[in-house]
Amino acid sequence: MEPTELERVLRETSYTGWRRQEELPRLIVSRAEGCRFYDAQGRSYLDFASQLAATNLGHGNAAVIAAIAEQASKLQYVQPGFGTEVRAELQQELSRVLPAGLVRYFWSTSGTEAVEAALKLARLATGKPKILARTRSYHGSTAGSISVSGDLRRGPLEGLHLVPGTLWAPDCYCYRCPLKLRYPSCAVACAEEVERELAAHDDVAAMIVEPVVGTNGVIPPVAEYLPRIREITRRRGVLLIVDEVMTGWGRTGAWFASELYGILPDILVTAKGITGGYAPLGLTATTEAVFDAFRERYLPLGHTYEGHPLLLAPAIAALREYRRLDLIEKSRLDGAFLLEELRALAARHPSVGEVRGVGLFAAVELVRDRTSREPMNRPDEKLAGKPTVADEVATAMLADGVYVMSWVSHLVLAPPLTVSRAEIGEAMRALDRALELADRAVRPAVTQP
Ligand SMILES: Cc1ncc(COP(=O)(O)O)c(C=O)c1O
Image 1 (tube, rainbow, N blue to C red):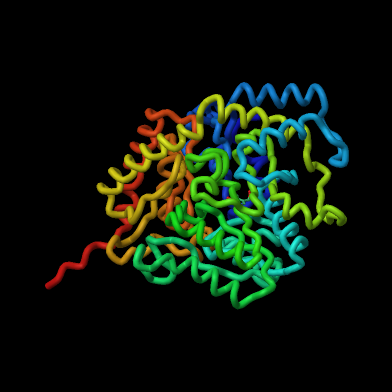
Image 2 (cartoon, rainbow, N blue to C red):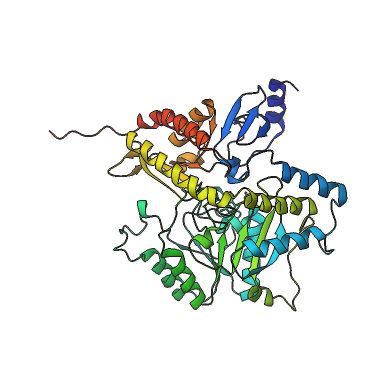
């Protein structure tokens, strides 16, 4: 099909998530290789977001592609009640990279489903209905998972398609402290709010956290926060679900961010990088203690494509590629380099309020005023489908050949872990140029008479 015909067919026949339906596809992508993808006209784009923080191994990895082809020629699908070699092999490998104690695995086909399974397992295992979640979080798009998400995307579903029973805790977001305190004199009061909430409710099954908030700002917590949350939840008999859909598989410079912050969750959820985005796979991993609750009980959970061989085979290959290419350590080192580059760039642009990150996972937060920290845009503007300044910056970068993600008032940078320093430099130059747009939206300083 010609590019214009392609665009017409897609426009007239698609639903596309998280946007106004009249919007056109931003690009029509034909192929991808390494850290680059190409549009229908053959124009090249540097993928500085791993699409949606998924293609951690870059595009076109030969080992992962071969694993899919080999599995396809041997066994494509069997129902999940049958065992398979590929499942046994992957589960054996997994126990070597996941945080210690996560030894039981439930398979699904997305991060959302993996979260949904975690919530169901936690509620069934404890017999308690409530979940404590945080106000800046995204855990998925189905009724259960979006009900524990503090993301603006839950807004249109209020009163229509949400599951009751979510309690809220503040985030560990020092740049905009929800408690209006300052670290370290705050003594990590945001974690103490969890203690208060759990003391007030004895029907909480689990607390769910993104160890580093992803879409809603790439916010690494202070070092004491997650260990304190772990201590509180353990003491109060509340399960801790760690959502590592984005932060897993080297994104933060460790196999999993749980490891980075020294915590052992009861349930860990992951997807995206587990196959490097080559196949849609979700994993819910639990401790033996959680599994014990089901040993002699019927498990009301399952999917036709649970443990699908064509999804598991690329996960084995991906895991070996992360190891062979030493990508976890590379993410840590190149992440530090990226952050330094971003700091240098922030110094030149008044629209940048803060840059932060860990591993190859970073955010550039845009403000109208550095002193008051007034955000560049509001969540309701994003929901109304109006391009935010961050969207305009990302659009300018795309026109300049570099793809990054944008949200309400920040950009998310999450290149494949295989990215080169030269490619990081290329992205920084495009960002430098595009930030001039944001600088123009900064409020002029008021001069004193
Ligand atoms: C932290 C987190 N949890 C869950 C999800 C949902 O995953 P999926 O889009 O694969 O359903 C996402 C997606 O971006 C995510 O970032």
